[in-house]
Amino acid sequence: MIKDEFEWINSITPRHFFQKEVVQGIGDDAALWSVNEEMDQIVCVDTMVEGVHFTKNTLSPYQAGFKALAVNVSDIAAMGGIPQFYLVSIAIPPEWSEDELQEIYRGMGKLAEKYKMDLLGGDTVSTKGLLVLTVTVIGKVEKGRSLLRSNARPGDSVFLTGTTGESAAGLNILLEKTRHAELTANEEKWKSQHQMPIPHIQQGRILAGSGFRISLNDVSDGVASELNEIAEASNVSIHIERNSMPVSESLRDLPEDDVLHHQLFGGEDYVLVGTASEEDFKVLADTFKQHELPLYEIGKVGEAGKAEVFLHKQDEKPELLTKKGYNHFRER
Ligand SMILES: Nc1ncnc2c1ncn2[C@@H]1O[C@H](COP(=O)(O)OP(=O)(O)O)[C@@H](O)[C@H]1O
Ligand SMILES: Cc1ncc(C[n+]2csc(CCOP(=O)(O)OP(=O)(O)O)c2C)c(N)n1
Ligand SMILES: [Mg+2]
Ligand SMILES: [Mg+2]
Ligand SMILES: [Mg+2]
Image (cartoon, rainbow, N blue to C red; front, top):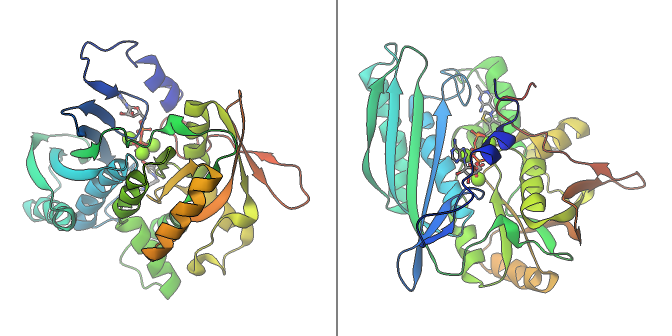
């Protein structure tokens, strides 16, 4: 079996391109290629597998459809882009009824409507295993405005466009009690963050529109993992402050260490994490404020030369944060 998802992807990454239009291949949230003088096209694909990404107890078919499209739209947000089209490949086990399958498409349709995205195609096959849902999203972004993971520089402010941790708390509850259980108001909040995350397209558009040099990643595998990806792609160290990590109101009653663990390693938050120069960050913070959107500064980029991420806690030695978020093929 494969040992590490990220080493595997590295091993199959082509070292050159045939097509001169390629702007960004493997290695970011989505790929980019040039179509004309003004815009680059964006494409990304993500798969949801029953038993790995959801079960019939954690997501309804409607929510599975909604989320499968949302996680892809989130990768478009991480490139600062506008989503336009989607394609759906589905492998259907005998246990799934036609009504349930229609519900998956209704869920996707709901999110597609929000962004005026059109379904352009896909593929339908049977499987003797569990359900597999693969969504491809195509979008566009103004040329030169791409927000690559490799853009972080020493001295940058590190930011988050939302709080993290609720999705992981929601998953815990769902695995324990199922989606049919009576829940407290806080648990309901976590559950909906897990089941129907809203991608940060507006935030990505503001960041792209600024014209600033920005590194950006969406949070699927956890803040610690995504920051390590930025650190690696930019070859810099990143330092975040425990006390600057924004905490959702709904998580405040949980034990502090559980909250921190969810915030850094839980994943599936689908907020954006990135960096901008200190000066540009101040401008962005103002712009986000005007739009009544939060933008949290959680730390700084350190020096160039070594890709490392550290968590600073008051009076304690900084803790090295590894990519210990979600990694397919790693033991948990
Ligand atoms: N099997 C694969 N073949 C080719 N490229 C892949 C494969 N799996 C992942 N990638 C690429 O590797 C990069 C990292 O993937 P991933 O960690 O899934 O990104 P994200 O978390 O943004 O979805 C992306 O650029 C993606 O397109
Ligand atoms: C039943 C169930 N178990 C575990 C999880 C947790 N989980 C599954 S995949 C994942 C990470 C995100 O998915 P991935 O396929 O890595 O997306 P990508 O990074 O490619 O965007 C997490 C936290 C879940 N959502 N549901
Ligand atoms: Mg991503
Ligand atoms: Mg992916
Ligand atoms: Mg992942």
